[in-house]
Image (cartoon, one colour):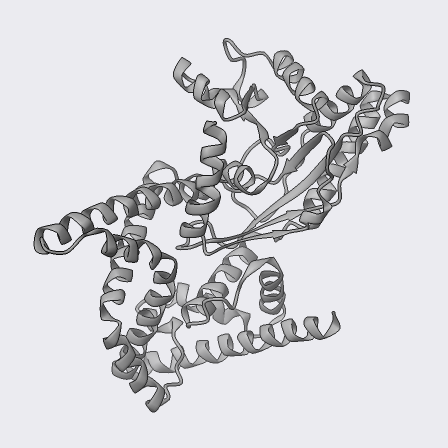
Length: 426
């Protein structure tokens, strides 16, 4: 009961409200009516399990590190959420937990035709790479099939989670399902030599996870891509860099661009204002219309600014919990949602003090329903203010800004051209 309530709350309310987009890809590859093990990449701590639990139609059982089962109350709650404790080698022996019992429970679950989610990398680290996969997933699958003479028809399903930037406001994520690996196909090798069969299946699981995962081979490329993406989004093209395909194209363009060093200019040049992110070309008539429109929607602009302050404060609090992005990124999303709900309640209380003759709930409903668009509204005002700063800015900064703008504009143009060419090819 608790599992289903949390699942639908996450799917219908939390992720639509606090994520820019959740995209599902390859869903038709999910085998039906057979035991499954989901082998999932693990870039963002507990948020990964929440996503899969919310959007995967079947109930999932989650292998979870035993160190979080710290009290009888939590053990009871986690059991209701289908969480199974597993002792990791890095954590050492854990009193009251035994991996033999865990494997036995997992084998029973698979024998009943159910689905288990495993993070085969073993740890969660924010990086655009798939780390070496542990052999436990393959071992569990093969041993379970061996107990039933390889007649369960079970499969391992590689799943990749591609986030654009988890610590951003309204992050986007792509859940990519790969080709299922039928465990029975490894029966002969396992029968000859179990260890060899496990290694072969483990290697194929890792390849399946890598197939659709957006990977970068260095932190330098990650840094350049993050800056290029930020430039394009904050120039007003809020949906220019959606999903993995566009990120791959943008990374390729940056890697091959002759002027790629310009991407590091903002980081090296002290005193450059945020106007570096806005278009330098200002069309007078459009600029006037934008100012008029901005004045007309000023209440929504104030609300978006308030929500932005909540998000920035949430990020500041989250960074105090950890220096690792995979930790503070997930925590920021949770803290932001809690502070937002607190802000809604505070808004309702404030309205009730000044409008005794009017009901409060319509205002709160409007505030809640408008939240998914406040990111776009804030970006609109950000760009409007940036244009004013450019108009009033220093001449020497304008030249630098213009050079960066020219380069970013060429990236946008090439990116759109690559996307259009791809559509034409398809």
